[in-house]
Image 1: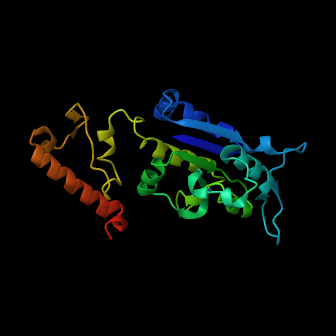
Image 2 (image 1 turned 30 degrees about the vertical axis):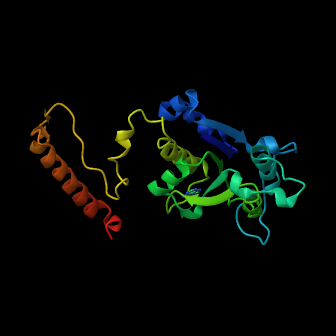
Image 3 (image 1 turned 120 degrees about the horizontal axis):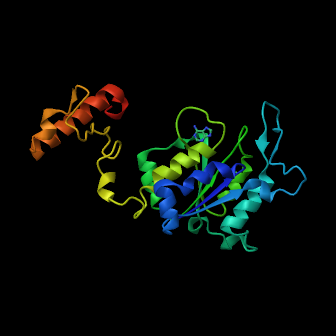
Length: 237
Ligand code: ADE
């Protein structure tokens, strides 16, 4: 899978060189390319933002640098407008608190894409025309990590790349470990224990030491239901 990231803070993505995602990059499973939006500016101050039309607080990201980077990633517009086929281009993901909500189901959908482009906005957002232009070169989704506001799209893109990347075949050594996780069956994960059986006065639940697979499975399912009822009743509604 190819993933392009457009940002004014490429250093945020240095950590994609470590851990499982880093290993998958080294193995050629994930081809991740980070682009500095300021490289597509042509003034001395490498300006990427300007004041909003209509007034208001904050700054808006200018469309011109975005247009150049989109052309670089997805190809310049064809002279023949009928030749443009956005369904064959990449999927552009713009992290935004004004987007649809990111869930495990979204991660699964995006993990099946051959080419994702994450456009990380800063300030009060990106000039709206950038989304319209990107939609001529590929499909576009604005996606929110949750109902809170971050300073920009970088941390949200990182979280999404990790959630998506681990679902790409070959990234996680044992794919079975993906099955029994929180949100995969609509419930929170059951509690886990390892050795020793007794630690600082805390004992591992008896049933897990019983070797009785049926009873273990039933206990785990009950724990999932109880936790979900307690912590995330919205998931059961
Ligand atoms: N950018 C700023 N806040 C965000 C959020 N909650 N989700 C995605 N991108 C964002």
